[in-house]
Image (cartoon, rainbow, N blue to C red; front, side, top):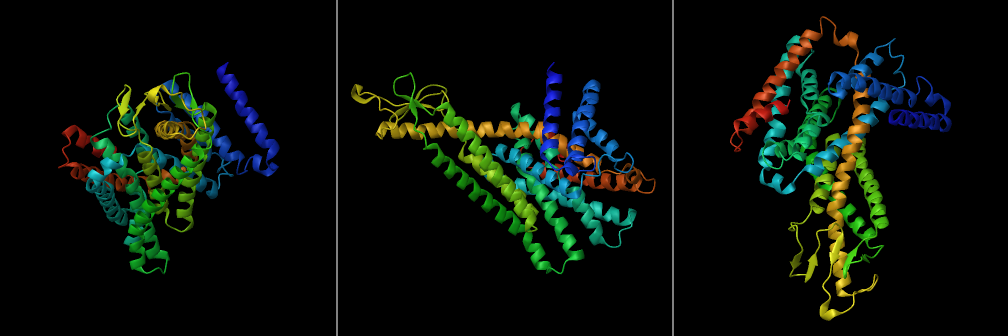
Length: 451
């Protein structure tokens, strides 16, 4: 009955779009119908088959999308145009980089920033170099510039593949120290480095841009993205604090205990989600608009990591603790605060601007931010797992030509080139992990997980 209900909701959603949108968009070949149809069929059919055989669901999604994309020269995928793929991929990048940023501990990154840079850049660069050298010989590129374009395109880590398993390990208690935290901090920098290097070699082939400016764009994107993301996080933090003051904390049933009304907390959560999403998407697409895509991704990482740092929970024991500075007792119950009643005075009513009420307002804010940080992380995880990932894999699979990929003169050379580069990536990922106090099992994990 639950499956039928979900199917009915999908049908109603499709009918609503069919009624609202112009007819050409919702017919076969339309830029709305085809992406939705391919994503839905790939998710349902591929996911069901893989569930039956106990395989990862995304494998089925990718395979079914590949089959649909190769039926009658794109009979079902004519409407999945390049703009649709571009928008879906950038939204996916926004979501997965946000998830990575929420999990980054800035204090830990500050301690191991040299290790982060080493793991981000050395394996990626070595894979690209080896890939380019082999590709020049096996795949017949006219010069090394074209070979390096392909090398850096292939060598970048895919955050959507690496980040979710690392977050899963961290959720199980394995990622607070050791290589998992290091890898989460490095994954976006790896992608940004490959994006910048690819753009650099493309400029060498097609652009009249001075070489020195192309080189300078790398650190400019890194520093500019970090600054813009941090400023965006501070702006969102300030706006949220202003919105919180719209409603005063109310007194609960306990004497001198205050909390925000539940309706106000729900409204604030909706505002935070909307504002964060707008800022993150804007950073990614502004980077694309000004040809600094790497800077946009770094900006989102900086936005999420800075916000997570600002909204991190304070170290409070799981009992009532007296704060001598504020002369108040902080309760363990979320978003509540107990203010001592001096000399048996009656508790201030909501809206009374007393010292006790002011401290209650401040403490309620301090309790709201950590819980909101956790809710934001959970909702972006749900968005990635249930919407973005199926759509991304369906779009990617539908764009693969089986005839071209498995051509007898292309496939063996392509596989050989990729494997040569990956082998050097693993070796240098291991080398980058030595001297950091990791056990041999952790070093092996870094090499395998950094593919």
